[in-house]
Length: 428
Image 1 (tube, rainbow, N blue to C red):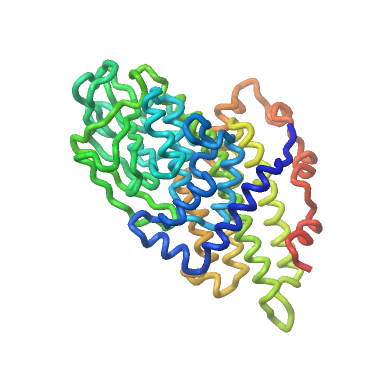
Image 2 (cartoon, rainbow, N blue to C red):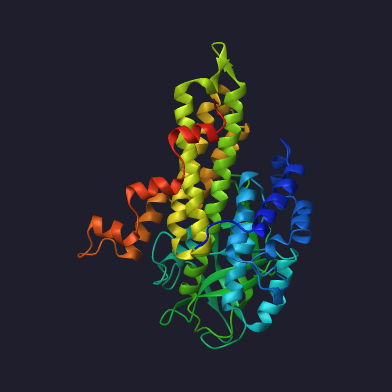
């Protein structure tokens, strides 16, 4: 497999980076998150109309660019660098693939073109507050326990046609920590249908202005990732798909693996930007008559961070081409982002501990993403369970051999040495 980026992929990165640089600045993020939407609507329209960002990975027949998850991951790496508040992840990485996979031809034709041109944003609402489990990233989602169940709990779908194809449904219940749930024009709601004896989890389409829908924006650690509580009180809904025989759990897991690869690339962008800003700071900040970055201990810390970020980037790019590697790439990227942003706060010294400083914004993004899509150890544990690494016939050496990875190959794959990393980080 050729891991090199194409000219078109380089152009996507360059164009998006330049656009975000022009619209960025110290006050850009607070101004954006302070709006009712939680992001800058004017900038979102430009990203959709000029760059076609929300439709990047959608088929051309629906007005998309017909690209792959790799291009969307590269775009999200740039939005992660800028800590861009936007509905891109919730709409393009979570909701759109589910509509494309499960929707009827009429539903796809009605919704996907509006998503592609940016006029419709969407969010995935799952009860229980565990988006990572619902997507099959940190646990098995086949039994539907993550969505509640029994005679109460979770979100229930009842009404005309219950248990049959078609028919109007009404939803009862609530979902917490819904990413961009307060502003999305369309909600994909996971709910139990069929009654208690034949309960199963299905996805339903709920317009943002549906009667009985109450949405409350929550206070989140990372204000650039708006979360909401969604309450459904006798809310009319439409089943996603032609009938209720679709394998929703499998569709959620497939979408979760691709979304994990995209989110991994975004986390890499966050970590890389935090590291670059830290390098610039330690080169300019002087202590004891010399630049802080000239001290060997600081060089070593920066070198270690550079290796960690580049290894995570390699994993994210591989996962963008092979979604099965998405959960492990996400674990590596989230860990790299957490460690790198934490070190960035430390290396900025006293100013880095100021809550309003940009170093803290990067730290909060890394921590918030791990709370929403992790934790890292559970991502790795579930990936190991799926791979059968803990089976009776599996040994540690056999598992490593099966993965095709040796320690030396891992070092060579990173493509850097400690000294080379220090040079690449720009510290002399």
